[in-house]
Length: 277
Image 1 (cartoon, rainbow, N blue to C red):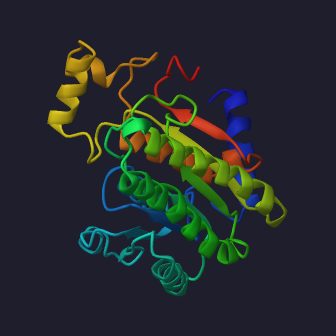
Image 2: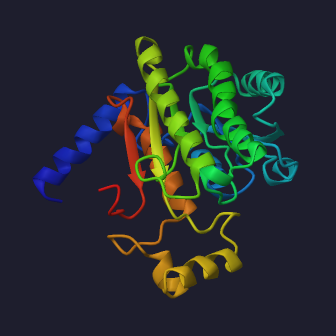
């Protein structure tokens, strides 16, 4: 092995030793994570990735299927509607009682509303988006903060949307709620920095292996832009299809030591979007 590579390995092992870990220890061994909206899609991928890297994970979702999807010793599902402040308080407390703490919060629960321009916006659609995408995230963050303050390398990761830096027409309810979520993350970064709690936001786009992207919807959107489905899947600067696993890998990176000096950041994971760049 070249001398430079030997030095790099020795340096990495030394840094791991400082953290009380061996070179073979899982990255998140000994840390406890909470993931919302985890019965499927991005949340599901995040929960699995964190668990595979050693974290003890609680997965919240209003869908009762979360109980069947996650039922292991170190990863458990709990039914919880994030709109319900009391239910969130109980779920977070139960998670901490089960695993002994909270170190990583992935605030992912959300919905994409029907396409309506503001002039035709149904009141219920607007309010539902705010209740789930914004107020629900606030509920979870608020109840998690006391435990995160006692956490090990604590962090909060908000799952935002490309629609924050680059909104589109007929997606007002969703775009505004996600923009509010991003502002909430910025405020939390300011408020929690003295506690050593990092708060960052991830903005995915066009993650097609999620529930909202049925074959019918995907084919319809591709046809609207005069593209094949295959081209539409890779309609970004890098020509890469972004998957839930890609988002989960970025979430794990943001929860890890690479981001130990970063808070208040917004990071796209979209293959490169011309409107965002």
